[in-house]
Image (cartoon, helix red, strand yellow):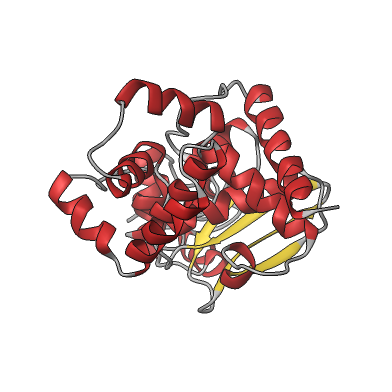
Length: 264
């Protein structure tokens, strides 16, 4: 199959997934982790992974799971999460994806092209891009259109650029100089001047305190703690985090210790 055909397979899978999850076919994904974990039911772990490793996905006991490198730029993390979710939704085998896989160019395996297509359509659906263009009109410059669209859908400027090309708003000839401007980081200064870029979601919060575990993981740990099966120190050791953080999480949840836990 051609690159276009593989991408279209990813686009269609994303549209089907958004419809199935009740996310609609136009609106931005407010919180990618919540959409994948709470709505789709796929646990998401955000943690520090080796440099160059974007994320991974697989199945355990028939249930999918996703890991995302929480040290990468936030827009890249969102795309990686959607990319890994695409692998799951497209029923691909478990995979470990490097930055060059998720954001690469040139000849790439069909599964990676499909997952990229899924991520692009899942985060910035074509119908939503067209509606946005109709609502905002024509910004003063093509680069401003790119950064405003990127801000609206919480994606990178590069993803926004190619989504505008995908809906035929920009020709290939117009894309090249804008891509060069993005490569030279000109979009960053423009975002600052326009007051764009500030956005808070689960990935933003997770970055301040890695690792971030799926809600189900901490819920299971809290249950074991309440039943006296594990102490805070044992849970902290299993999760690889500080015991103070575990205590704070349990206090926030109103979890009380079982009979094996010392009373501090």
